[in-house]
Figure 1 (cartoon, rainbow, N blue to C red):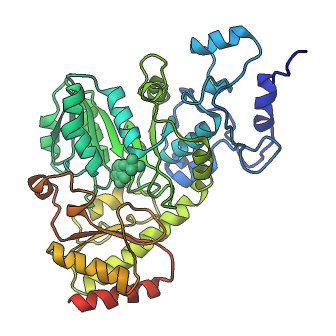
Figure 2 (figure 1 turned 120 degrees about the vertical axis):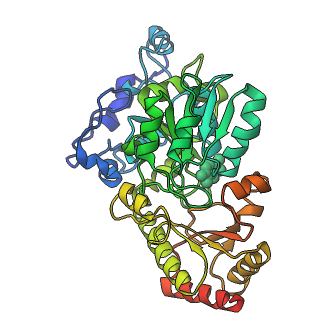
Figure 3 (figure 1 turned 135 degrees about the horizontal axis):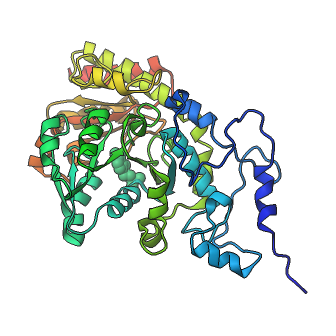
Length: 443
Ligand SMILES: *Cc1c(COP(=O)(O)O)cnc(C)c1O
């Protein structure tokens, strides 16, 4: 008796043919070379709502979870055509879930819409997104120019791992100094300019339009880590070629998942999935399908969450400053990058949810965090960010400890720097009184 093999067209039609009067842009955007030109796409919320809406197989309001590792076909020729690259995920043909998976692809489309890139693909961590895209764009003997103020893991990857394992060398240049960046780029040799939109942990803001212009003049690809500012800043809309995320942070928001994404052109994402040369395909940092579904459910309220993170950070920063504390927050007009951030950020989100307090010494920083967690219950001592509770860490001795003393000084990290990821639980006044009570004991 013949096995009932599902017909490809039947599988795809249930989600694709369901009418959706609210959505104007129903065509498949993956693999499509059409440029996004509508000015309204400048807004990430608009772009997310205008994206392709996927329904569940039985008409569920949510997409179905495709938990298959492998996919069946009707005719043997179809497999040949899929492996030759003639039939792909844009036409609902899937080979194997380390390559494309429908559920992970749907989440990836949401992330691409948010960032305004032609395509995106999600990975199992932020570090795997960063390392995979760099290995795709840069080969042995090539050169990278990067900001010295980077997430500790990225800094270690560029300083130690890539030079040793693959002879890829990085020059670290203060990206506030555009002339120095220009001088550091060696035409033909430098392949990537890498920096963070808002830097970790010192909260300097990158002049993305100018840096992109300088890089593009010399044929260099601009890769921006936008982990600190999803929705707030859209690097690709400002000229960057590739945007990477640690989804672990704000995009997830639950402090429960490790995940990442690479956003860029369809040709970049396809090259990373190439069966013979693709870094995602061959190194295999695949996102779990169930994780992709969970994350997809959190994207619709990312904008709301970011607004509240940003609002609380601004109010706390202003009040901390009024108390005489040394606070670093790009939303304050005394921050050197305040006007730059205002000019490049998306309207109505704010200035980011991260702020730093410089307590001078590590001892005072530790005392403050101890009081804030164990006495007044303002927040939690933990690394990471983007959680609904406030998280605090002393950067020099934690997330930036991969940098030695000199590198920390170069990156502007004082030993008493307390990094705060402001949460939004509790009422603002309740949380503020908890902060004030602890801080007053130290003043
Ligand atoms: C956390 C973080 C990363 C690494 O992401 P993981 O998801 O932990 O692998 C990269 N860049 C920045 C700015 C981060 O904060």
